[in-house]
Length: 222
Image (cartoon, rainbow, N blue to C red; front, side):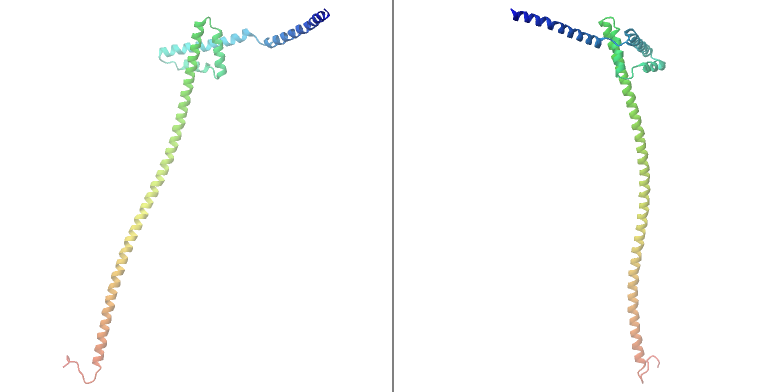
């Protein structure tokens, strides 16, 4: 019996502590979930709705311009300038569109419209980047073409100079061969003249020796 009384007493002693802990937890969670003092849901909703309405109006004007098919450059430019610039703004726009939807069909329509605008924005940005990249590549190719043309001109001049030098070398080689041929002919003629000169010298010596013998006269004299 005393144990039962002690158990009940312990239970009632622990009860305020548990209640106090629950109150503390509830106060902490309420502090965490409570909005900040400067938070105004009406202002945030109004700002989001204003931006969403502005973009929606721009989209409608763009659709009307595209449907009309003429003279709408200013409307497209103004619409492009009001589009979100980063992912956070797109998320904010999507959330605002979903929060202002009246029913599921309206939410689907709004979501499809935002996704269509996002797709067009991505396509436009991709086309602009591709055009910019193509222009840069075109400029780079033009510069490379100019460099190649200059190098080709230098190479042509070098080939022309080399051809002229080769032609001069061929002419000099031809002249050298002709001179060598003349030298050979002159050497042969010189040898022939030397032989003839030697023969004449021998005949002259023989004639001088025969004329120096006494008592012998030349037969042609008498």
